[in-house]
Length: 473
Image (cartoon, rainbow, N blue to C red):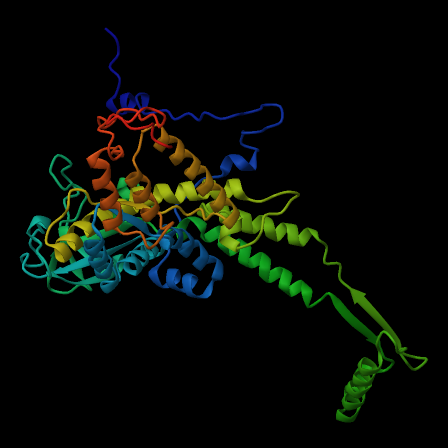
């Protein structure tokens, strides 16, 4: 009969054994216990505090640029609205300006990157209490009263289902309090902006808000600031005059001697120049130490700044506002890639929030939500005058070919010209007039006295059906 194994021995035998998938060289010691890099570990650093984030945003130009660049570009060209007639469109855009929608969305995006989250609270009359769910279909004309932007530290969740993922609304707080006040706000009355996405365990600790982008770039920003400060300190030591004066310390022992030494140095500095010689006593010596601020320091500083740009996901040309270096370098490809990234951010982060805002604002302004209403973000890429003229010429040639082939009608071209503001005086009425003419179909001119069937070919040399001479062309 086999001997029984103690329980604790069984546990030790079944304990999980961890292995690492890594390179190891037994000859050189790489990856072994003698390799210092094998002891490197990633650990969590403390998250940036609100006060530290604000100080970095206000006092550090590089930190502010990291926060502002992408939100500014997401909002800069705003969007194009389609599906509204001229008057409703004018009313809708006026409501956008009245509630300062563009600026409030910009602040929401910035505070999300700075603090990890923000929200716009919708102030609506006649849609129930603030703690009740909002039914957008109940919003009527004139019911939107205000929009308030709050960062995550002033928008505190109160009830969270973080334990049952099989229930609706898991990991989404249902109610919030503004400034920790007594009144609860239902989440449907808030437009949310989240910062850096966090794993679930960190999201729970963060009250289901995102993280600050500064947590990722802080080390890089601090290193770049240290490099700038260090180079600035070296500049003060770029030139140092050295005076060797006999009996210096003896003379400095008395006020009269100190005054004499300072006056001597003052006169020497005053007299020396590119045109004047340095006049000295035979027992004195003068030397000048010049520090070598090599060009390598400028390249080193550029490397630190590029690390910040890479950590923030922003091209150096955009983050620092500098032209690309190198022969024939334009930076156009980097800029286009960055604009593609911003467009993705617009569609994934800004678009869903704007949809809710549009539903509310359309019903507040027009009383209903037109089915034809749609919006598209305007392109960030701005063409030069030459590029714009070339594009318009190509569009004109394309439209002429399609018009000649009967693929499109004149009102289609007119509508595009009006939409793109090629001819700002074009109005909806002009387009509709062209459209109504197109609906009547092509009309053939009738020649008086000919009695030809409309649409039949006309030969000017043919005899007049009434018996007269051939018609003159």
